[in-house]
Length: 191
Ligand SMILES: [Zn+2]
Image 1 (tube, rainbow, N blue to C red):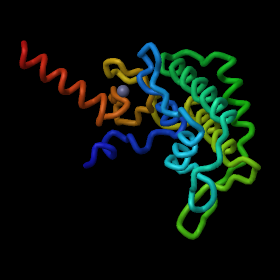
Image 2 (image 1 turned 180 degrees about the vertical axis):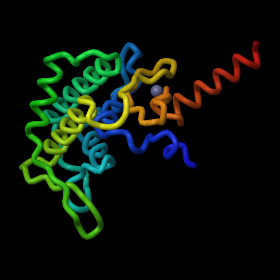
Image 3 (image 1 turned 60 degrees about the horizontal axis):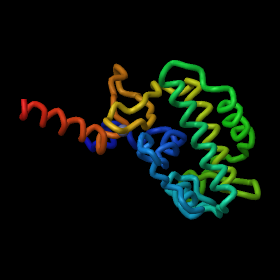
Image 4 (image 1 turned 90 degrees about the vertical axis):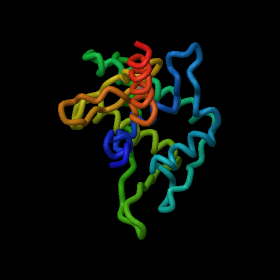
């Protein structure tokens, strides 16, 4: 079985995948993967939130990029709170809820399968609202699974543990899980 299938990496909720566009969050300056408007457009298209039936990267400007990063950080902070058994801060909840309230997107059956339709003027803005609505569901405990913080060294990514027994510890087996396994092996060899 492929790692992604076993760890459920591919099935991670969109909103949590979105929080990983800021990497190395423990570093003095997190690595920003959404540096330019085109980065956000590409990410949305890759996440299946592209515009039109072909799912093309939607048009994004600097203003929307800034708003997207703000929404992402509100989702991330709220997820950290949920992971530690606390209620997300009121300001973050309001921020996420306000975006979710703008959700006007719906799914349609097209020629090549299911895709999103964004009836508003800005498909990218509607796509962010979809991410916020997904955060409401995921952080509100509606989905099956437990929101956790990755146990990998130097990683504080958030993920949804849907494993039986809720025993998953890493955001991704491909990165953090493998590193932890190698570290454990080295300790055993050296000890
Ligand atoms: Zn990790």
